[in-house]
Image (cartoon, rainbow, N blue to C red; front, side, top):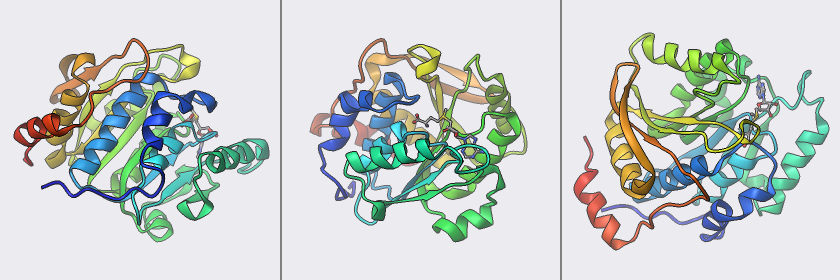
Length: 276
Ligand SMILES: C[S@@+](CC[C@H](N)C(=O)[O-])C[C@H]1O[C@@H](n2cnc3c(N)ncnc32)[C@H](O)[C@@H]1O
């Protein structure tokens, strides 16, 4: 039986943000990514997955706010953002981020901001700074190949057994180094992580780009089944990638959308998404 978790904030705020309020925050987060992340967050609740949420490269908080609005009691958000070079020199960016978090009712007790260059944070640092129990980790900081590999390695250690990594900008022509890094990441030393879903870009490149969801192998099938069910109308095809079979690709033409996770859907999910 799924363990239903109690929301930290207004339980309707996540849907309101996904459907409307997200447009009021400047940043890079397109409607296709909103739709699939919204589904992934519902699936985590349904599967009883708990832990913190985290993002490297929060900018003004457009994506992180959505993760925060899905927090459950006892969870918090971890934000890593350099805010200029030297770190913190973009004080206007930091102020805008903090104002946006406050505007959505996310109190300072609900998140921790590390104003730092993420590539200088080791896994041991992360563990002692945060406790290292993350269920959703967005990697969207420095887009150089070395930095993406470093941030992915940090995320890999930080997520818990059932956690999900959101890797930004795969296949974004503005950042070929990100594609190179993610491909090399999977082609390098064997790891227990697998690609779970591609979310295709669906807007001008200034508004964001495609994303890849990644999970540990024992959870990958459950996430794939759930995402295909909740986003069936926008599932385009499944392809092999970097040696992994059947990675679903989602593409959304318009506004954020997903099927509701109602009792009928729950029955189907219980049938198809049993643990591997
Ligand atoms: C594409 S933006 C992120 C967009 C954001 N995720 C959103 O929801 O709109 C990339 C962010 O990464 C930050 N950044 C770049 N290099 C970084 C580093 N080494 N460590 C931490 N943050 C970094 C930038 O300051 C910038 O705000």
